[in-house]
Length: 163
Image (tube, rainbow, N blue to C red; front, top):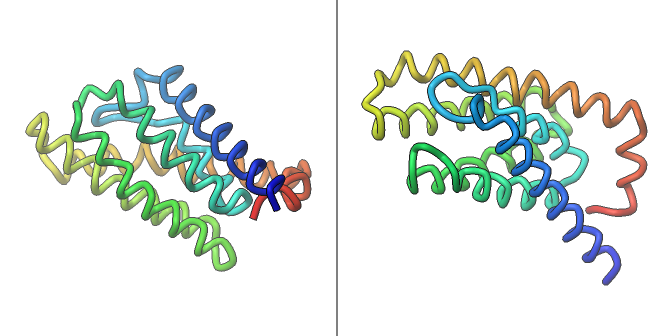
């Protein structure tokens, strides 16, 4: 039991660190109206990682957004991210793509709203730009990562490690 908890915490930390590193490594395309946040591909692992993945990615979003040009308001992004990550996990048996797309839509609504508030950008046009970029990263790359992880046995490797 204790080993399982330790492994879950370790998985959360590793996922969080990976997310933050990817946000900072690809910072020029991780923020603003036109963005493809490569780190969002990790969301494709949520159906395999479960709650440790959700917690790790939520922390990763918080830490990754510390450098956001939007300022402190972007730290609130953890709330819609957490809700979206839960949706991805809950829909894993129905459709991974559907869960990833719901996440993409939810985050696009939020990011477009923040860009409207902070930079006074037109909401609908901003939503479209953000939605396309987030969908590419989250649904496109995320689903590819999900399928690759299954194909290369990542799911079996984690089976006894996380719940």
